[in-house]
Every structure is written in C-alpha cells, then in structure tokens.
Image: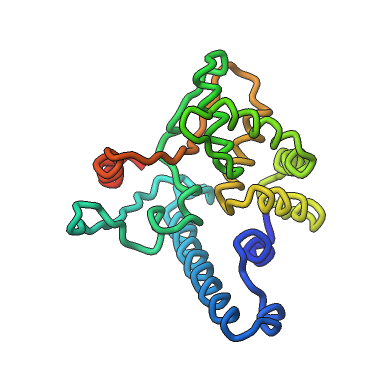
Length: 232
C-alpha cells in the first residue's frame, strides 16, 4: 500500500498547502486548478472502490464483476466523446489503470515479434516511443533504461509488496523516484508493475494489458468502435 497524499504530491504534481504559500498568484491559481483535478479523480476512484466493496460476493474480497458503463456523445465530426467522472479518454490518471475484462495480449516469449511489442509497450510508460521505423532504437533505449539503479531498486520494492501492508517511507521514496524518472505518472507505474511481473515470470507466455498509442488517418473510426465496445 502507498501513502496516497505522498503519491499525489510526488507523482501527480499535487501542490501541498505549505508549498502553495510560496507561489506567486498566477502560479498558485494554476496549482489549485491541478489540485482540484487530481482531487476529483481520486474522489471518483473512491466511489468506484466503494461500489466494488458493496457488490462483492460476501467474501470481503473484490470480485471485479461490477459492470462499468461510460456514456458518450457523438460530436459533429462523428467522434465519440466519453462522459463521466471515470474517463480514460480525457484522464491520463485513469487511462493506464483501466483495461479489458480479460488480459488483452498473450505474448509468446519465444516469439521475437511478441517480445518486441511487449518491450515497446512497457517502454511507452517510460516515455520511450519510437519514430517511424525506429523500433530497434527504442528497444535499445528501453533496455538501457531498465538497468538504471533507480528502476532496478523500484522493481525490488514492487516484488516485495504485500497486499494490505503499507510500504515504509524508504521503499515509497524508491518507488516514487522511479515513477518520476519515467515521467508519465500512472502510466509509468503500470509499466513498472508489468516489468516486475515479467521479470518474475517463469513460463513461455506472458499476459499483459498495456497499450501502445498510435496515430493515423483511420484511427477515428477504430477508436469510436473501441469506445462502444462492451467487454471491459
């Protein structure tokens, strides 16, 4: 478990009351706006967790079987705009934390292409995205990044985490330093968690649900179809 207040400040850029007093008016207004946005997202997450707890199977454990519905409106350019407080379309906080109902990808670790896509998916959480036809370069950057001490120390912390037990201050600092090094907020945390699972994986297959971002002229139609999908 993590110290939520420390996570908000260290990872998401939340400004504490003490630091707010040192800011000039214009920067303080922007900081308050960021704080309000983060607070809204954590409030929405709290409501979701409460609903999951209240809809468990009686065991006291999350069943994750509660359906989540996102409303959307169709704009003039035929793009679907998601509505609601938990919104992966507009929130970079929620986007890496949501996934398909079942693991989206099963990588064959003996298949070169599967391993390449897996590495690039994790790399995106570290801010490493390849230019066109530059995947090999990006993978080299990724392999160098995961050997950095700030990352290797964090992976050890993740592998030592136990459900229901809060990490001590030193362990949290190590983890937060790695997420800040990634520079992508909860996306960096998702990549670190996936990388930790990968390194402890002993089989020839690996399931994961990270996504790579792509851009292109056909994406509008594809994204719209994805937004109307129900198997989440």
